[in-house]
Length: 140
Image 1 (cartoon, helix red, strand yellow):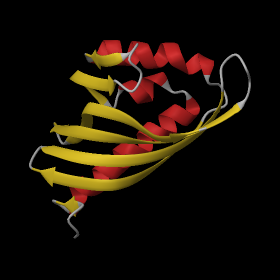
Image 2 (cartoon, one colour):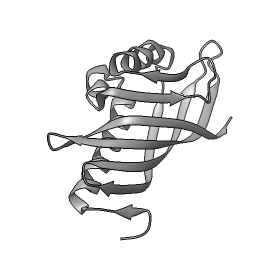
Image 3 (spheres, rainbow, N blue to C red):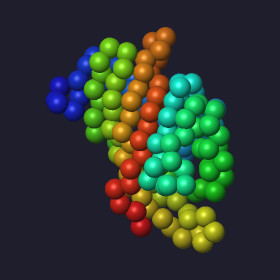
């Protein structure tokens, strides 16, 4: 175990699978799967985009994502965890991702490297996103 990874290995594996399931749902535009990863009292912090800010509540989070996805039909989203720290039924994670997509309206290839800083909760033995904070690292 390193400073970036702590807590029971079973929980860390389950959280890694949560992150990877998120990426799979994005790549396949699977709204039902994507929505199943969030708790009701969730927050999606998209303050990088001032017009979006922080979206609160599972329904609002899912509605925003579902309304955006049709604009990105050729999206590739790859995730790599950088930190998973478990403390009982709560955890923090940091996940780096790379995405390639066609820019809506222009069709130009766009690339983004970004990070999510996450707060997770375990409910009924399953891990969920409670808060995801989005941050762009590099974009072309």
